[in-house]
Length: 141
Image 1 (cartoon, rainbow, N blue to C red):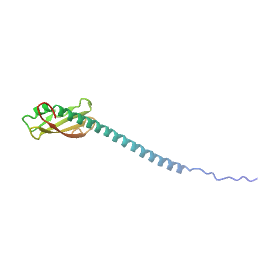
Image 2 (cartoon, one colour):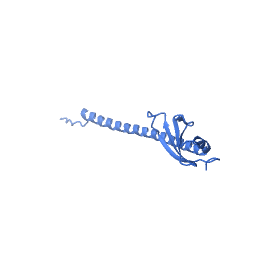
Image 3 (cartoon, rainbow, N blue to C red):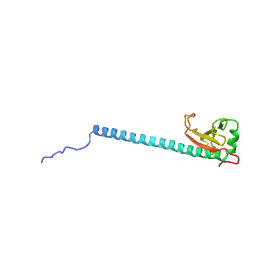
Image 4 (cartoon, rainbow, N blue to C red):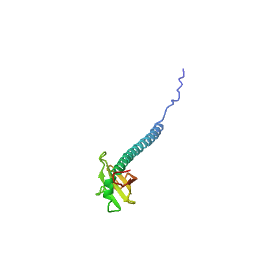
């Protein structure tokens, strides 16, 4: 009786090493994409928080137009707070400042800048928002 040996079909060691290498490169690319997505999401959250802070500060300055008018009484421009950056009360990771420029007796232009304490670039604001304040006795209109 003759025994026939069939050729074994399987993968060689080289094929397995190549397959594992291709899989490793693919997984690395996926992990890198997830990391970039996470960093982008963190940046977006910071910008959104800065936008809310800038809007709130601008509205506060519009409501307190009498104080702004007093600060700009004898000068065409000013800075609030006068010493520069100030911590935002609702989020201690944010700092803000407002630059005021008097257009005429009743109108001042405001640019609110917000920066993050978390980032390395301390001099670059995360967001700037501009607005107008009506300077009048008795509050904003």
